[in-house]
Structures are given as structure tokens and as C-alpha cells.
Length: 196
Image (cartoon, rainbow, N blue to C red; front, top):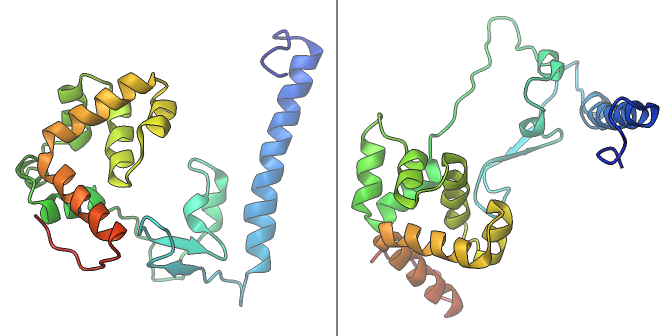
């Protein structure tokens, strides 16, 4: 209804304030109230799970510190003990680096061996799509996303999404072959994995 309300009208202002209140209420309930319940001697001790997601990514809970909104004042609540600092780090393209090694894919290995190159920009150039769409294709294909879901994410037709995915896998044939081997082994209930 917010989009339908006439801009500047009383209804538009009211709906805007209501949406803002809803957002702040969620932040308060999830991060302020939720974190307060989990304090122990004035500190939070979240649980980090090495295998907490189906994709194999690190996860966090009680509370989930990974979901704190960026750019919010909430991040100021977290203060390291005296003499300590917080370190933020990111394994740049960790999943695709593993895929490049397992599949022995030369194009990907070349990209990851050169710090001046960026996989998303290069995929975008090869597929003639935006970098943001390329990023979606790269991450989606890592986890075996099918054409219909990719079509929704990219807001393109099924045919176009299928072509993008086919073209992407055409540029990394060893990865595609490796994924097919893994799928075949899963369906045959084999849990051993040997790269092609």
C-alpha cells in the first residue's frame, strides 16, 4: 500500500513511519533484547559452527552476529576487551578457489593466482551481463541452483537464464564435468570423491 499512496499525503507519511517502526522493532527485538538475554558477566559468547549450513559456510548463533545490519549503530555495542581488537576478515572467493583446485580448471586457477583479476568482472565480460548478475550466477552455480530459480533471481526469462548458465559452464568445462561426477556418485550413494 505504501507504493500506491500518493507521495506527500498523510497516508504516505503514516505508512512510511509504520514501516520504519516495524524495522526498528525487529532490530530491537532481535539484536538488543535478544543479545541482552544471552549476556554472561557482561559479555556475549556466541556459538560458531564450522558446519552449521548446508552449503558448508561458517555460521553463528546465540546470537547470530553475522546478521547485524551493516551501517547500523548496533555494531558500536560490541567492544573488545581492553588490550584486544576485533579483526574482520574474508576468505576471498573461498568456495570457488576450492572448486578451481578440485576440478583442475585452468581459467579459474589463473584468475585466483593473479590478485589483479576478479572472477565476477571476468564472468560478466564473458557472458555480456552486469557484474551484479555475474556474481549471482557464480554463487548460484556453486550450490547447484537450477534454471527456474536463477531466472527469478536475475529477473530474466527461463530461456535467457538457461543460456547464461550454459554459457557459464561452457567457460569452465572441468567444473561442469566435476559437478556431474559428484551428482552421479550421490545418486549411487557413493561418498568417495575423486576429481576428473
